[in-house]
Length: 373
Image (tube, rainbow, N blue to C red):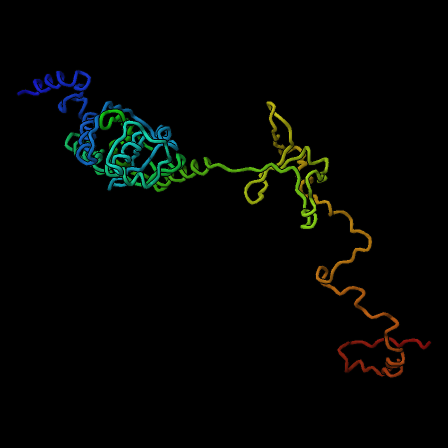
């Protein structure tokens, strides 16, 4: 029986819509891989995962790295795909498909109604690897038998991608084959979408300088770091209170603030690192901060750094010994406590200046005689 006869019988049994897949000999199935992926996905679901499945649709699109970020969302389960040559791809399960496959794998049954949605974890991804790995292996082997289809070989499931901002740091900046499979499981009441993205066929590598080789990584790191969120605190005024004062605070008490604090504001990052200063105002009915320019006064600096006790010392202020490093005046004895002057040697006990021998001294001249009083 010829192939056309087989297809005619299938059309009568399943309908024309179910027998719309092209032949493996046509040009459509050779390079894009849609027919091979539909066929191997149905086989992997049935033979490797143990449940009847049907591929309703397989759409193909050519994507760039920036396009893949739309597929990675918090409710979906996104994983890296790795092969032995260091090339990376992407697999994304919709929550409906992932929960249906997990229910079948863990319970052995598939209810007609989906359970309540929940967050998908790395443990769920490890279970779904029982489907992802055989599917990729089958698809890679089928494409390797076709001219120019070696780009799909050798892939397996890797780590979970928890944040879409990590995507530029993981995947390469190149073109991708993007496949979107619409699957139905069991009686067709449960299912969802599986998205696969594999790098296009590698181009012959050109001679590159070390500077060009190292350029993509800093650029990817820069875009990833600058895309991270940073929490800023708007601070009007900051003061200090003792523990006793804080303990005496009651509802309705007022804490005085300087008038300058109502207009000045300081933006601080983590660890109270000052980012910039400006003035407090409003925009479109909401509170806003106008950032001060380089030529404008920054009132927040003086207003925020001033403390209420930084004025002149109060009356009777005396520094402590440990602050000054010198003994206080009160540590010296009073004049009345000094010994009587007769306790000191008399001036006559010292040798006269005339008895000083200049030649035996270290000086090369004589002191002039002192006049007698």
